[in-house]
View 1 (tube, helix red, strand yellow):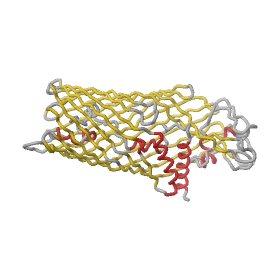
View 2: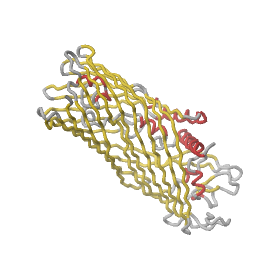
View 3: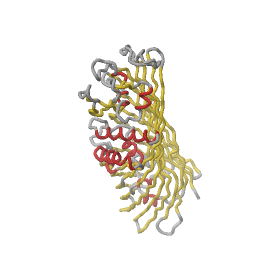
View 4: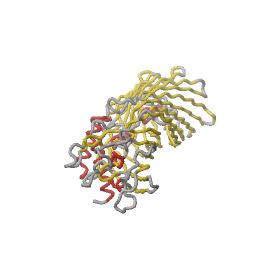
Length: 516
């Protein structure tokens, strides 16, 4: 088996172990399940109009077709559009009783495209194409605490762990006893009692960034009087990165005995001072998505709408790199690294939207929408048949850990005059995890104004605040009772978690120009 293939297998084996352990936190960004659910999601449409006023039963902007392609038939003018978004997140994390703040931000193109409304003597026919961003990942976690329970090296020692080889070559882990048939954290080696641990100071920063969008084409028409129908097809495209720098430091020189042979002369001569892990995941994904919808005008000012988004197949290509660097009390040290590539596919379930809208009643519009997605039906497909059992374990993990969710969005818009309008909205997004803590409340506001010559500017802002408990790292706890006759057993997989309060703020701006 090639080195890269072996490393990939180790990754999946470890995640399979984690998935089957009850104490492992499901909210772990490194799990395939979390990434798979995120890559196909579409809860946030990043558009200053549609992001405030859902488009299931209302023609709210260029991104309306993502809610319901039939709503595009409500547009009676042609225009082009270009938009940008700025997204910033600030997080307060409590880890092992110690709090630390960390933040991050990113700027992206949010939408670009056109809508063309054909001149008709009766009804409407509208087509369009372009790009819309509909998901974004922006997280920032900082920690600095004393851990008297575990070390990240307890993860490295796990049988089959991805980082075991480079951790061993840098003395972050070592043989557990003279029989050399099992690995142990270097911070648990050299004691009279197996598994003893004196504690370690930990500090680290973890950032997650990403965005997903859709290159789409759509068509909508008034099929019968007051009945609009529409369809869209699109290519999903996105990227995600996870960057972690995690250091453990023997600040109090607790480990001051000779346990490491740093000069290879056969005699231990020093002990550990610092252990530094730097690892990064870079993922790119693509897929195909289609949707159909209908909208009916009950009265000139009241609309109802529904849409169905077809299941999607998403292909993911992932690059993983890691480095472990150690320094010892005698100022010597070692470092080693690895790089691997992995590809897999995600089957994403269908999505159903329902909406009702009050459309321009003396300048007042109200749009309400709900969306149903069964995240427990997400499935992962590994390319290699050798990983079939691990594929089953991952999918069982998703089925047992993720929930069926109804999201809600609503907005109100008012035309101040023929040149300006204001809007405000609210959204509630329940946790995607069963019994999850991270329900999200979204507050939005926006303004649009005509600057003349067929050009208008739309501005919007979104604020979200939520709390969650997520994994900083997972690790193995040994059952040492078989020693010294046999190697210890893996008792269970646990995780060190951080309780996080996140504040997310997003600014969106779009310029719209008429097409004659």
